[in-house]
Each structure stands twice: as C-alpha cells, then as structure tokens.
Length: 415
Image 1 (cartoon, one colour):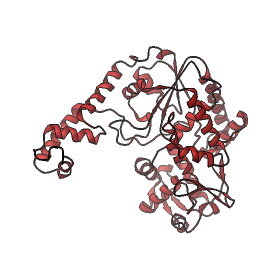
Image 2: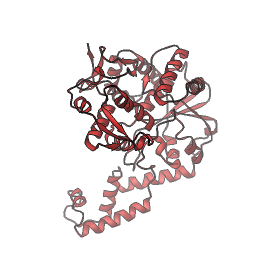
Image 3: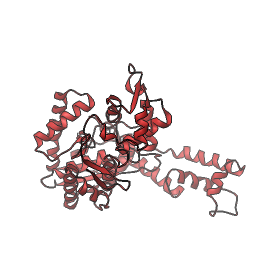
Image 4: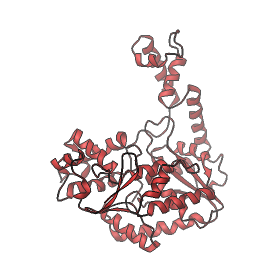
C-alpha cells in the first residue's frame, strides 16, 4: 500500500505579506467595534489603550500558533532560507538514504533539492495481524491480509513486501540514513519496526520526527507539506542512539504480543528518547473493542458520524473523521473503507450502503436498527461480527473471549 492520502489543511507555507494585510484588516474591524471577540483577547495586554497594528499582528500570530509576531516572522524567514539553501547543513546529503513509510514525500524532497536515495516500507502495520514470526511466514501472513483487505493481487503484494523488507536490511549498513516520521500510529509503528530489525547502529542514523507545524491548522502528515517546509525540517533531525533502538525493540515486541498488557504499560509511560511513541501506541490500543459496545475508537467515531448526518456519503464521513473527529489521524481512504466493510457485509449489518453502482466515496450510508443498538451499548458488536480482527498481535475472534479496552485505555479481559 502507499502512504495514506489525507485531507489536507495546508502545506505549511505562510505568506507574510498576506498576514500583514490580515492584521491591517483586523485592526480596522477592532477600531469600529466590529470584532468584539478579538478585542476581548486583548484584555490585559493594552487594556486602557485603543488597539494598535502591533496588537492586531500579535492576534494574527497567535491564531497561527506563535507567541508573537517576531516569532512568526522568524519562522517564515527560516523556511525561506531553507528553501534557498537546502544543503546548508547537509554537506553529505547526496550520500544520504531517506526512509519513509510511503512515497508521499519522495517528489517533494527532489523539488526541495535533496539528492540522496529514497527507500520506503508501505506495510500498514496499524491494521491486520502483526506477530513475531519468522520473516517468510510474517510476510506471507501480512501479504494475505493486505490482499484480502484491499483487493490487491496477492502476487503483487508479496513481491512488494519482498522488495521492501529486503531493502530494510540496508538501514543497518554504512552511510548516512534519515528516517522521516510523524506522530501517528502508521508512522510510529514503521519507526519501531525499522529500528527493531537493526543488528547494529549504522555509521550515522538520524530521525526527523514532527507532530505539528507552525501555521498549519490541522497537521496530519509530512506528505502535506510544501518542499521548502521539508527543507526547513532538515536541520531539525537528531541522532538515534542505542537506547532508542532498545526502546524500539521493546515496543515492537509488545505490539506483536498476543496480550496488550506490555503495550499498555509503554503507552501510558512517556518515552524520552521517542517522545511521540507513547501517544501513538495509546491511540492504537483504542482500536481494541470498547467494553460497552465492542467498537474500536475508529468504528465508534465513524458510526456516530453516520448517526448524526445519515444518510451521508462514504467519502464525507472519511473527510469529517480525519479533519475533525480523529484525535491522531493515521488512516488512508482505502484503509478506512476496509474497516467499514464488515459493518455493511455482515449477515447482521450495522450499516446500509446505497448507490452501489457509484464509486465508494459517493455511496451513501445509514445506520440499521442494530447499528443504533450497538452504538448505544445495548448490543456488543464482536458477538455478531462476521470475521476476526487484529490489533498487532492481539486477535479478537467473534463470540470468543478476548481483550477489550476500558474508558481509561487500559486492557480488560472479556471471558
């Protein structure tokens, strides 16, 4: 699979002249009393004085996530400089291999002036069985799942997995390697999988890891960023040490385990050397069945959206989920579609799909009476689900005892 395509907020570029114009327009509105909310935000700053252009600029900067107008300007200047000098802090960049969990930044890296090689691992580790198996059996298991879930030719899937996992061995070779990751489970699982497989640290292994970009309303992935913003990220990379690799091995082992207990312990403990890992693991734990309805968080949020807006287009639900409801976006559109199919195809469906002749994003969905009962907690979904479901190495089989997640995101056994 390719890296998920997300609905984008913006690409991280900030036009300073446009923001200056916005500040002047805001100042005029405040002077006429047409923007009382903004005036209220100035209370305590210059309480006794009329609003000034400096005040308006401060408000604009705050809207974009900066503490002051000078900090906003410094950020814009830094991106402009990085765009003009993509190699200013990367003298060996032509000999660097860039690693990513998809191909979403490959073209932008070239546009930004990066000259190194590019490698990727597209295995969507946040879905399907992920167990501690010998590599050939592991690839066969993953290949079978990916082929069935996404309707991809099994031979093509196996060939891609063979190529990508063979390439992953190069991460431990000499030279300079840089991993590009964001905060969600898709990326963080790729990160620990890549590091856990190392037999030893290469000569220079670095990580670019980001969970927000100044000025971006809702950051969902590095792939949404403009090439010059990627260049700005480059000098922010940091070295990966042996402590980080050991943590990755521990986390990967916990994720592959049949019990989620060790994974939950990691998810509820901040990890200094990989600070974005614990929140991603916690979000992934929430894909276990909830104790009241048996739904994962993704399933629950999606059914709630259908309940509120239905009948509603499939694609509209995905866009709303990613843009507003999902706390840590990690799904691509086809991944979302695969998650929703069991609700439709079950002998006891929770959703009715209309307009089947249309492409899936345009088909409409509405809840069945059973769907309402599951969503309200009157019926427990895994008792009726048509197929088993996996969260890493944890298997949820219909009608069988399994692990659940409580309201505090701790695992509970359902006997």
